Image 1: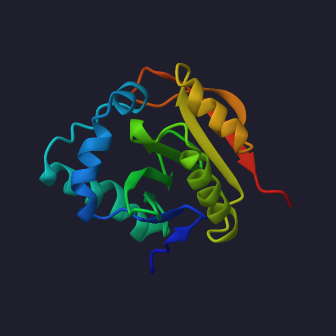
Image 2: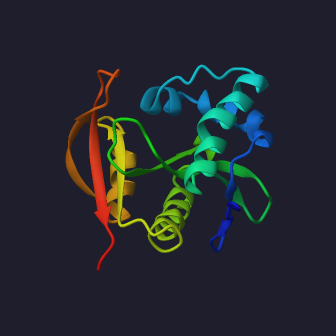
Amino acid sequence: MPQQTFETDRLILRPTSEDDADFMIILFNTPKWLKYIGDRNVRTIEQAKEYVRTRITSQFERLGFASYIVIRKSDSMKLGTCGLYDREGVEGIDIGFAFLPEYEGQGYAFEASKRILDAAMHDFGLHTIRAITVRENVASQKLLEKLGLRFEKILVIPGDEAELMLYHIHKPD
């Protein structure tokens, strides 16, 4: 199944690949990633490539969607990631996003997430999208609500003691 690339006015969202390993190391080790998403123990190029192979490429092969690198059109700068994830402990498909600190607060996360949400509903035929975030990540909650997702309940994923806020949105019939 060919992997799709998506665009917005300012952004290109292309499937994450092993070529993005150096970027993934930087993103995975930012203070906000570590605080709000968790330590993935990805510190080397080989660990990052292995993460992409086992967690991202395998999901693309299985479902046709996964994580996308968000690239600014004006200068080809990699800003972050946005994608649709089949997460253990979350029923259905989950939308997620993470950006380097220097690109926060400029509307990129909303623009990328809105495009991926549209792709989920129209290109991939999904009817419900979920999202999870920790209580402390108010910026993420605000973005999810701006995208039209609504708080559903508190969720604890097996093997993780953290209480997560579960959001959802349903495609209108």
